[in-house]
Image (cartoon, rainbow, N blue to C red):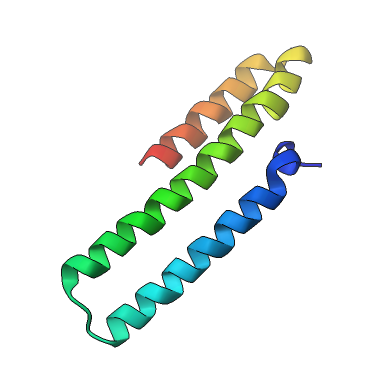
Length: 90
């Protein structure tokens, strides 16, 4: 079971909203909407994805990282966490 299972329903709901935002963006481009309006919606979709990612990171730290530390795999899991945070924040 994933560490984010406790918030899975919320994550799925948020991802469905992002999917709707992306479909809306496609429509906006097809309809030649104003550039600034499209960019604002892109920023909103990115923010929504960032929120989902933050939720998953939090659950990862509270679950997977905590468990790895308890099993004395601290260095390995910390390296992995730093790597994923670098990718997430890029």
